[in-house]
Amino acid sequence: MMVRQVVQKDVISCLLDCQLDDLLTRVLLHLDPGSLHQAKLVCVAWCIFIQDNIWERDSIRKRLQKQHLTRWKKADHDDREWVVNCMEEEEVVSLACDEWVLVAGLNNGLAKVYSIETCGFVNLLNCRDDYYDLGPSEEEILVYTDIGDYLIATTTSRGVVIVRNKVSYALFYKASHHGDHPVHAVCVSGDLVVTGGKQDLVVLRHKRKRIGRDDSEYMEEICRLSDHTAGVITHVDCDGSLILAGTSRCLLLWSVEAEQCLKRIPSGFINSLILHFPFGFTVGGGPSGGVWDLVSGEVIRTFGDRYYSQLGCNGRFLFATESERNLMLRDVVYFSSRDFHRGRVTVFDIQDLCDIRPEEDIFASNSDPNVVWNKNFSLSKPGFGCSAINKSCLFTAQNNVVMARVFAKN
Image 1 (cartoon, rainbow, N blue to C red):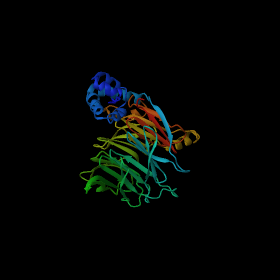
Image 2: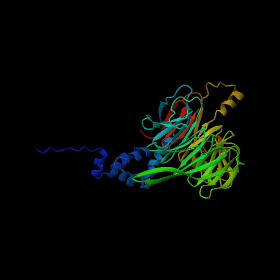
Image 3: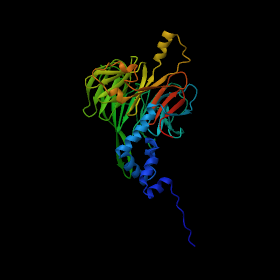
Image 4: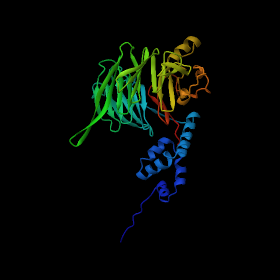
């Protein structure tokens, strides 16, 4: 007697079999871009349909992008919160993320990886010089991270640089190529990892080689860039061909291929920066951010009306994290209590920042949201923190608590 096996199919596969393309497209338009990318991973049929009928159809793609953009601009988000388990006096000092994971750098030489979808713990990254030392740290070791398409890079205030495979978290590069100097600046761009020490930049390139039947990977140092008259390097960003470095005195624009400085711009102290060539966004010693024309070397616009400690972007939006320096100013001017001020993160529209009109006042965007769209997000508790952003979420961390503002559809 033959037993007929019943194969269960999901709704989308049934719609594909019935060639109900229009109906299926309308169903998929209820998803945000990140969820659509995850849906493409289900099977080949789903991947082909989403690519052909969503991303490669201009009208559908623009409609989807507009829906997602509207949620950001209306601050239409859901909140998630979780605690990074730390020992006493340990806290989160840096955040980095892609569309799937968030890496929280701690002040004990360790970093913790969390799933953005589930908020669950994924992995522990030891960023210390002694790879087998996972015990309590007697001294403070600040960890800074960045995530690329294939790599996770971490640096520490002790000068240790580590590069890992993003999928397996396998460590394949570890060095103190800046000596004992703290390394606060790190950027991953494609197959490049750029780190900034006291007065020099080191550029590493990701390489693969086959040994027998196994593929191994390693990092090759391709160049060192330095300008000893430029001051101490504070931050760095890279787009694969150009490197923008901020120092205690100026901005330096470097060519990776030519290994030379293309532009030196006197800017004063730089806390953080973003390379968006031909523009550069910076925050530093002044109570606002600046948009620089990297070709002419001039400030063409300012944004915000506060001191900021950190910048980040997701391609369309730029965030600026409020600096504790604002609290010092409030204490002097208003005699306010330090225990009640909640820092905030301000999000700006990069298209507005780059839409420059010759007759426009460069300071107009500091207080007028009609000139440059911006939205303020206050932290959940009194105090200040660090931030990160991807295409669907804005993350903030205070002490050991991470808050995710999710702009994607449920």
